[in-house]
Every structure is written in C-alpha cells, then in structure tokens.
Image (tube, rainbow, N blue to C red; front, side):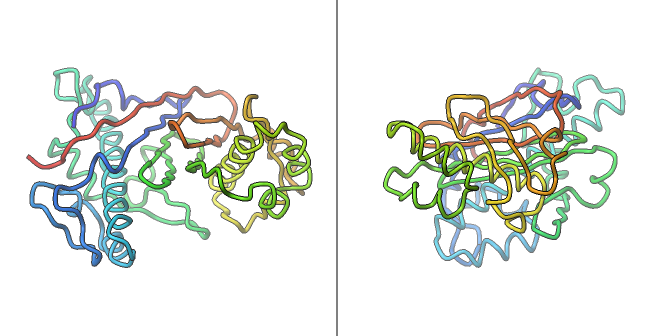
Length: 288
C-alpha cells in the first residue's frame, strides 16, 4: 500500500481528492453483518472506533457493511498519513510521512497508530471533522462521499470542503425530480437542455448542490430549492445565488470531478485561490 512521498504535502492553496474503488480493497473474508471482521490478513476493522464498528453492525447488507468498514479505514489511513507528514516536517524530517525511499507506506506503524487514534467530531447536521489533539494544529479539513463501490475523499487545509459522488442511473425520472427538488431556475434550465444532455445535466446539478450543502455543514436544513447552481454539464460550474445570503456566491467555488465511467461528482471549496490535485488509490491488502 505504497503512495509517492509527495502525495501528502498539502499546501493551503491546494485541495486533494482521492478516488477509491472499495470493492478492490475487500477484506479476504469479508465483514459479517454484525460488523465482526472475517479474514485475519486484514486489519481494517481494528482501525475503527467503537461507534464506527456499531454503525457497521447496523447495516443490513454484508456488502454495505464491508464497504463502510473499508471506506472508513482508508479515510483514517489517509488522514493519518497527512498528519504524519505534518509532524515529520515540523520535526525537521524532510521526508515527512515517507521512509526515505521516495514512497509512503500506509501500513507503516506510525501511520497506522495515528489512524487508529483519530477522533472524529460531528457538526449539528453530521458533518465530520477531526477532533481532539488533531483538530487544532493541522487545520486539516475533509469530506467524503460514496456511491455503490466508489468512495471519494477531499482533504484541504484551513478551508471548508464538501463533495458528492453519484452513480448515474439512466432509468430515473430525472425531469420530475428536478421539478420537485431543484430551484425553479435550475429546473427551467434543465428542461431547456437538449434531450441528449438532460440526464448528465441532472446529475451535474444534483452533485453540485449536494457538494455545496455538505461544505456548509447544513445538510438538508438548507432547502435545495433555496439556492441555484449552473446546470450545463459541459461548462464550468457556478454557484448562481443563495436565497437570503448573497455573499455566499463569492465565498464558494464549485468544481466538477471525474470519478469515472457511470459516475458524476462535484466539489465545493471555500475560497477562490486554490488548485486541485487528484489521485486514485490502488488496491492492496492492509495485512502482511
């Protein structure tokens, strides 16, 4: 589970996005519906907190439980690597999270220990953040989304981020959903699109809106109909207006993601001056 050493050097003008195919990271024995780990060669289960294990146990499907455990463990390992990178640089170690070989091994004991010790805090609407001793000094922020077997993580420093990824389902009644959930401005723009673009436009609009409300940490307390984003999937996304908060238009930047075939994704980032770095995390077992 090796990543190039420079991957975890995160500047304040950067946002990192990681794509992970959760089904390629499946524990050899899977995860039972009660959340218990099967397969001694995988330590993902051991990285989770008690509340995460309880949540995995409440999921009804074995596949959903396995994906949840894998996704949370990988989130912890990635954040652990960023924190280890910060600690290494603060201590004068130029290699940061690396071992001097030009690579970072996410199985390294110090990264695994950091991952296991992470505490997450949750906002009033459920947005996760680093808690405890890790919350202050690093200024790391993050967000995550998953759809079917794909997980996407965004990591930034000193700015809020939100993201959404959705698997495209051609059979859904996207026009009716748009009229029901989108702002009148968005619904009209969608219905004016050519038929060949309308499904893509629906998912572009949906993921942009979800990314924005997740970045703000309000969840659906902010009605989807009270703000508008651009709909055209082939143009740079824009936050057009937010009812009662016109300053938000200048506060946030939207960006479409490229999660892969049959998926749509979007990212919302606080501020204007930043650049995106994206990576796909290859498959590997955590154990020996």
